[in-house]
Length: 453
Image (cartoon, rainbow, N blue to C red; front, side, top):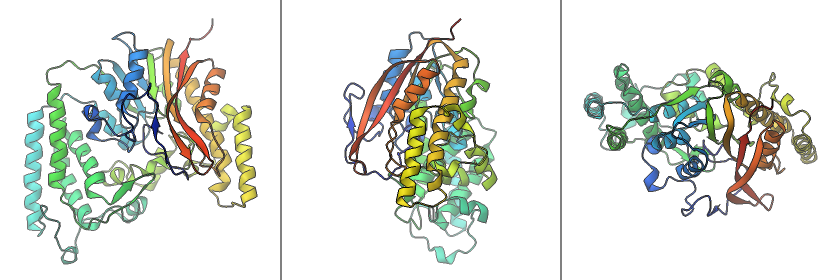
């Protein structure tokens, strides 16, 4: 999912070519341009799709200031924030609880900046005093962890859900103390902003995580100064909010939900434009990308909650497949999808791959495209006739090097469901050493003509 993070597959990217008509800027591996950091940079998935790509399609699709923009896989809110910045009402749907929280917070511009800063500084002062009582100097990375044995920690169940060594004991202890102090201000409308700033600080300043292509463990930080890092993020938020002080804000909403049930969340025939990037069919467990902050900050409280959350996702990897999944029924007669699934299974047998996950490769491919077909079908109920849609998707070869031309297949599914396929724009290409082919990341452009009478 381009709007969520780095694509994970057994392919080494040796070329990152941005097509000039789509991206007038130089290639930056989807990093934010300096002018685009406002609000977007409060928290975002690694390699979220860039704001300038959203702008391109807003300019093409939105013919009226009353247009309503929908992102049914909104991730951390790139489409929603960019729409709001340009005066368009926007609605998002996101199944990941922390990503949904990030989107909703990034859309909340109606807080008192002065009170926000005053409260934040007070929190820092109080927490620093508590640290000093415990013999912790947060301004230095020289605390002797062996002298302290009563560090706060996660429960054994929650510890098992995060990547091993993703955070060291002392930084975790300090983070939990800061979180407790932040949560004393839940009644304040800027409480989510306090938490989101900690989420970003936790991942990029406090933890041992690294990204690229998959989330993993990098440099081990036995200690890390957290108060100054957190306050830095707070100040960035305040600076952004001051730039729009006094301006009228259009309505922007983010729903926590399943994009395959979009009609239960959005009013009928209300949406003019869709700009989104769904998951890609690969062996990446997207829930791992936000696992640390989701667990530490309390958005996932148990293994059962994690499982329930996974069931609301499009099935794009074998770690999110369940026995009662039946989305494949939506594409049961699609020849190309069936051919790919059969080819994957033949390759698996030929290579003598016998693990439980490998046996699911063919099935998850069918479930993925079936889920996308179900989503596109349910979406029709909320679209206005003439609505324009842009789906950012990417080719994949994760499943035993069998090529999956995602954009072409989704375009074909959409056409069979009654959409008009206008074109497929090339966003960028990557050379796949595993297959010797170019992998395309594309934008499938559709029009919903409305139901025929």
